[in-house]
Image: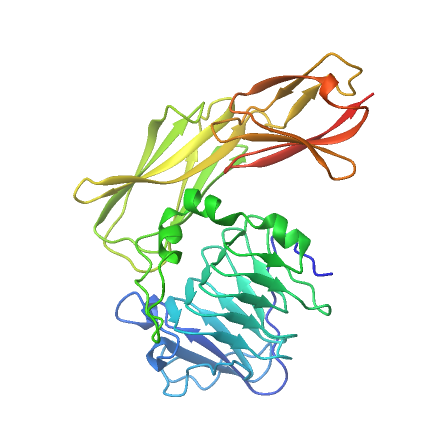
Length: 402
């Protein structure tokens, strides 16, 4: 059975001893403007020719070692000996298929790739990697028969079904990497569990949600380009405080970001302003260290303000200071009476479930408050998994009823 592991994973590029090429869409420094283009346009691509896996680039034609080339469009179905790197905002109008038996080569979505049709990874085809800041959006079915890596900060969105049906290759995605599938996920139980679904996409990335809900034009598959978009906004606890990181795919007629903080997820106070310089169509990253966080749960949200003063909230994140924020249950084991559950990260939209050893869900209720008391009489003796979750986090603990 295929497996999906969410772990930080960096794919090592391996090139055979035969002559090979690396195809790259044009990044900023190789174009006169931040690059937006079509997969089928040769102007969207450059190539670097290598003789072996460890050799330096050869056949350089300018100071960068690259030029647009009339034959630089990777074939589709892609079955040539290429590495492919998406560096700009690229759209494939129609289907995109990667041929079998090319897994010594890699396909990396470093920026944004939109496929208006079906995407297919053949058996032992090129490995797909979506690193931090990378976004892959597929309007049709995603048929995966080979390895997928969604690194921390990478995003994969599928409007159709996602099918895992290879018995020969494991399929990997990554922790912190996010998977949103509108249709059914089949052939991989773990992938089904990691799928956050469209409701979560709508909350976390409303612009992508609106974008993927449009219908490509018949025949041409033309779609309205993805609007100004926040790729991610996340918070992590460190010794010095709580570090906030975010990235945008585009910024147009934009003024500044404001980071706001809250103790309860409801009442926010501004703590930092980040001004930007000029318009951008490429990925830009930002960070801010909150050196004076509140003890316990710290909620952060990102406010984006345009040059005309129009503002919108683009993301929300949660991190803990002075505590790990774990789910607490006591008494545990319990011999009767009342159970107390404490979840310091509880906000509106938080749910709690209790599942027995057989996998049967015994209870599911909303838990918007940080403390909940339950009578043990509702549960027979046994071992249970108590899980709480919202759009910011998921955590669980083991409960024993004697």
